[in-house]
Image (cartoon, rainbow, N blue to C red; front, side):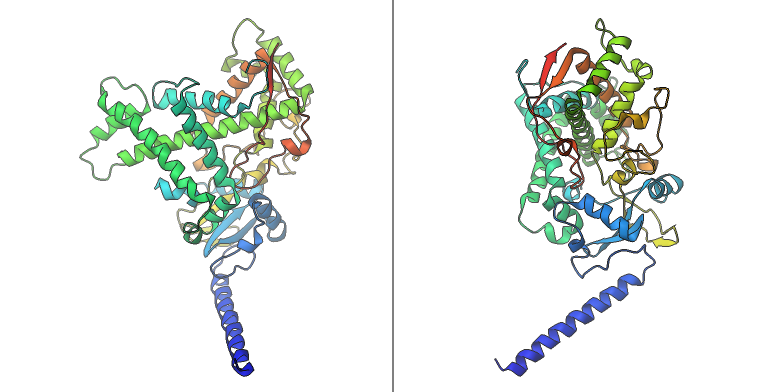
Length: 444
């Protein structure tokens, strides 16, 4: 090829790229959005996100662009909120405007041995999930039920895939990544199988329904569906029933289970904290009865440890995405209606202005000088405002009952010496999943 022709082609490509970039930059800067890194066409700010380290990347960007900044997930602007003050101002002070449900593409495609070391993953998942089963299905499953175990394993695998590098890419650029082969493609298949499990159970309820005597959540929903069957705009539809039950299972099982697994790993690492818990349990409850929720008010140290486990483990660091319900003015900027907003829970739970040693596990964050339990407005593991987690009360009760019952009867230990790095949440994607480990339950 003639060198002149080649040079002309190269020059034309360079000029075209410059014009595209210039036009894109001008278009996005015309909006009165918060500042942020300049996005590229198609991929947005993908290059600013370190591979598999979305949470850390978002926190690092806040140091440069401030507590409120704009990041582009592909061509879609997303508002990032960092720190207690910014998150509180949005979710509490302007709660109505920030109450919309944001998009999460990894899910949106579907929503539309005694005395020997054991892996606690299935144990905790089964125990926690059976609480949800009692509410939703009106019964529980045996721990050796193969079908139930498969369902729980699918929950855990979905949670992990959503937090993987591929899951992060899918949430940022769904229009592209939805069509690219990779492990993230399994998320839709897993969710479909979970829906099939729920559909079978709903069918059993339909066949045995007695409207005068509802047995569980599904019965109540089915009865309301019958009452509203002439209402074309009713939200009580079979699709909503299946999605509501899947939401309850998915959110109510894996988050509490992961928190318990984080907590027990921490208590193995710090046997002195475990010993103090044993002492308070023995003093307040003793060994002759099971713990109950009323005991929590008499056990400030235990309550503080549970709060610190939730703060430190930070199971859902990015929060569930919100969206603004109308054009919203926030800190001098204009956020257009429908724009997704990520109020980063990690930036609140680890805010140095709110917690003395945010990067260390320290129950003292929730204790005053007299050893009494001390609340913190920055304790937001369930988020806050209009879209606070609906299962907060149940989850708090579960964490207290499970932890105190186990520690009343067992001492936790492991043959492995865990380091500070081992217990530190990994801060990768939408969920913090603890490292796999085994522990021994030794009778006290």
